[in-house]
Length: 197
Image 1 (cartoon, rainbow, N blue to C red):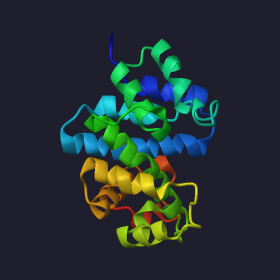
Image 2: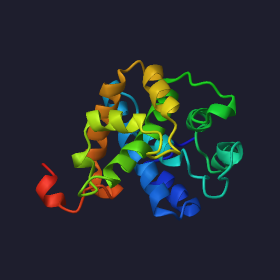
Image 3: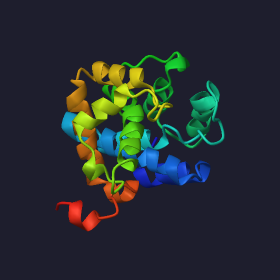
């Protein structure tokens, strides 16, 4: 079986996901996951494809446990590798699929956090990831009313599962998302002023 490339994964995502915010969420998770792939010296393309496709069926299967269970056979039909499909299944706590591989643990660790960091960016004066700091993220995590749909437990358990200090994990993902800020719609209203080469 020929491994799927990023372009094919993006095309599947766009076929099933029309919402810009959901597409951007996939890109944000991809930014974090592929940064970890580089750090761990893993296959960036495989990790990128996994991150892009992890919620590809969310619009058509918005309820648990349909997402991602009903999406998995759709990916199989399209030739998505079993390792990637297993990682996608494992990112849902209710799937019954344990997180064993580094890829599985990384996808889970980055999923909710990427969403939370996006929410943190939106409340900054310039709506930019460049303004988000680890300290303020930790403060917002304690505010149950802020981005209440994001599971704090998943963020904490995700970092623990990766064996990474939570602050370091947050910092690492902020930096990864800064590199892709324009794609994520998080470059801010003064992108030129705040972005550094």
